[in-house]
Length: 109
Image (cartoon, rainbow, N blue to C red; front, top):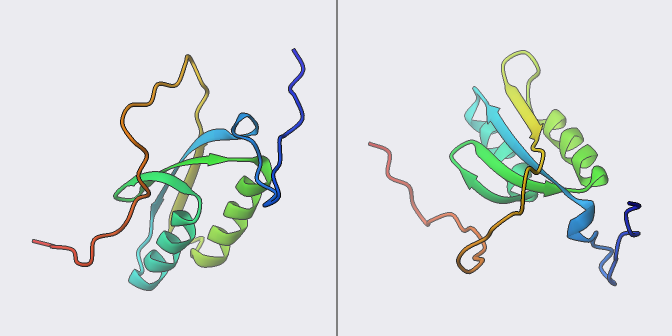
């Protein structure tokens, strides 16, 4: 069955049917690069837990993310994985969508 063309609004946003679910994860050794990688990934992620992010990306966004993260990370010392997940069934969502926000402080103990 052919896919319908992407639906775009005035902001040039791609319809969700043209996006794929990815899991992005990193292991960064430098605190400065870690902050930069976090900043890049927060721009693409819909959810996260520690250094693992859930991203719904179009093909263009995927390429842009990979280029941006490559500019931040050291290819020898750091690791980055972007895994595309294959949908096996219907996606079920519960609850109300809330934009993730970092707390004003973190406790490290």
